[in-house]
Amino acid sequence: MAWTVSGRWWEHCSCKMWCPCWVGPAEPDEGWCSGCLIFDVREGDSDGVSLRGRVVIRIDFPADFFSGNGVARLYLDESATDEQRTELEAIFSGKRGGHLEAVWDATVAEWLPAQVARIDLEDGDTPSMRVGDVGHAHFQAPMQDPTGTVTVVHDAAAATAFGLGTVTLPRSDGSRWWGSGMRQWESGGSGTAGDFNWRS
Image 1 (cartoon, rainbow, N blue to C red):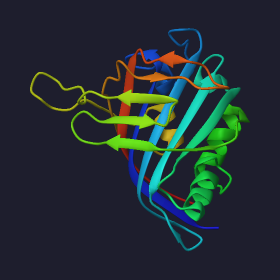
Image 2 (image 1 turned 60 degrees about the vertical axis):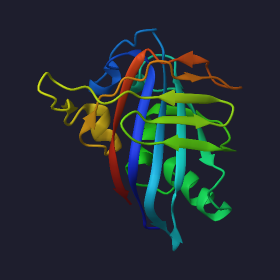
Image 3 (image 1 turned 135 degrees about the vertical axis):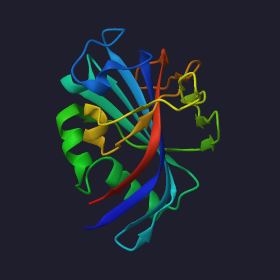
Image 4 (image 1 turned 180 degrees about the vertical axis):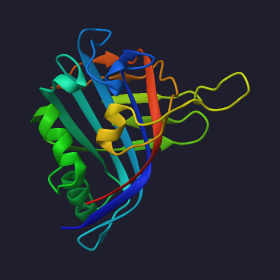
């Protein structure tokens, strides 16, 4: 079944700036790693369903991303229709195939039931997001060099696996996550962001 989704994404985790998992197997700052991927789907289609909505993926790893054995949960925006949420859940959990199927098969051992929540997002120079009663994320402007040129990272291992290409590096200090069934944590400052354009 063909699908396509595109939009803007942000990521942050419990590590300090910059999470070593992006560039390959490494020891996380805490010995374990918990992360969050936030997707603002601005355009998409799956089996004739027009897709727009926000999807948040939380993952707890006992070690690093590449060691796998993660526990993950999807949060789906309550503003999407039931039909849209069904398609978005299937795509972002890898059940509709594409590159996400291979990523999650290699890294996630258990998917907790998806939850519907209000996902508030304020984009701009310093984006912020709130997901129901389980977490909030705050991002600073992307890091820059002394001339004002935004720092970017090309073709990091994890970014390539996710099909994310070039990423920028906004800090995420003060972001926190909690909720039943998953680890409670506060961001150490690690953050990434960029655009995505995926299709099966």
